[in-house]
Image (cartoon, rainbow over all chains, first blue to last red; front, side, top):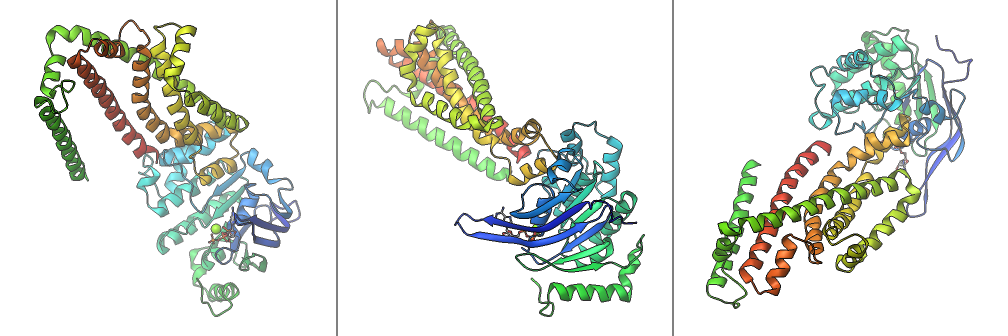
Length: 263
Length: 250
Ligand SMILES: Nc1ncnc2c1ncn2[C@@H]1O[C@H](COP(=O)(O)OP(=O)(O)OP(=O)(O)O)[C@@H](O)[C@H]1O
Ligand SMILES: [Mg+2]
């Protein structure tokens, strides 16, 4: 189902990204990172805080340029996909516009792309992320988790070719988070958008992704790649299997080698 | 919260009452001489029916030129600020030009306007100049007040420069622009009154000059009270608008 022979959707070749700090020092966020996301593949990115996960997504979105190495999106420069409005992104800080309502925020990509707003699609996404009845609310009136759900709906509204999700469920409680995971899996299974998801939750990564990539602490570097063995469509029950638990333990161990003393 | 607001309104009213009381006492007892009439006699002068026509004609004239100047200066100031935002290369130029214009005292510019335009146009021109500066500063800082995340979002959505301007920079600038709209009200009024000193046919400024030259102390104070009250009322109305916009856009 995943086609990795054609040009990959996202391709990182030996990418290093350093930032120049105001005091003149340089901070290396990512070092010599190579990874790829195949067409129609769902890849989850795990890694300790500050290891450069958001930076990696920003490189794909063309918001940063690599210090060395190359980033290609569908074999071309990231800017080209962005200019064609084919990229969907949900930022870690949700980035909703405070002066727009929930509905207007979700409609925004249509207006930026200069396309007519597809009202039914917008409403469908609002229902999907469980915000029916909040169409006219403003971001200020929503909880953190609701804002994140608006941001997810907005990232999907143009049916993008590539989807970047930066800890989209970070502010959700465990129950809503699991619901959203199930919903996201359903949406994703219908559209098979090439997706790169950043998360801190190992279970979420295993449930949603075809492949899980683990980055080391700063400067970030790929330390482990794991093919997720579960067949699709995945029922939430896979999370109860022994194999699932074993993989969770394995990945947790890779993330926090000093017996799970996380942050 | 509304209790807090009532309390601050009460305190404000108390302050005003105390000030007017002190004014009255100083005037009644001639504590600073003949040029300080008591508040009550200024009021009596101001509301004397025989002078209503005089005051309302002057006020209308001043408000007219201040209003027109406010509009012209406001639009020009915003347009200038917009230019600096859409074409960033022009930004240092627009900043410097505005600063230089503002550094010249309007008193010095008024004769030039009279020579260039006419006596009638000087109040409007000076009001426009004052409003221009306030609007330019409010616009220029406002257009730059969108957050980095909002600009990143626009970039990731593939927004063009104009799309970004109208969807993010402009709405993010509204709170700042509305604060500018408020501050520009007294600025435009002052401009219009000073402009009138150079021989406009009518207006509050003319009344002030006449009262001063003829030592008509109650008239002088009446006009000042009228100008100050007008400015305060408009300013308060703009404060209300400001509160609404800040609530919505921040
Ligand atoms: N624009 C920037 N200027 C300077 N340093 C930056 C910049 N952006 C990121 N960094 C630094 O790069 C490192 C990686 O940041 P990044 O946001 O990618 O981490 P992250 O893996 O997403 O962390 P988290 O899981 O906490 O979100 C951090 O140390 C951060 O301080
Ligand atoms: Mg991050």
